[in-house]
Length: 121
Image (cartoon, rainbow, N blue to C red):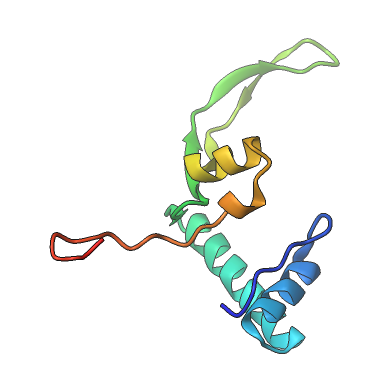
């Protein structure tokens, strides 16, 4: 990566594409395409019933929800809510700690290389 981007406020998909383009030294159009490709891949994978895990960021996982009884709030009549799927996102402990500490420098998802026995310190 060429440099870090420090957004001044909330990001939407367009601003995220521009930030990615800036970090990677790409055109804005290429940045938008990169973001769209990543988000589309995550969405299609989870919709296919598989989880997506990004180390030091989090995990998106489909979850099966069983059928249950509920009540119509207007009439009070019991109704059966059919079984289905919902999406769950679990944030990684590293990202959660960075958010809790309000420390943007700690909020990196780059995985550190493991040292082997032959590596010098």
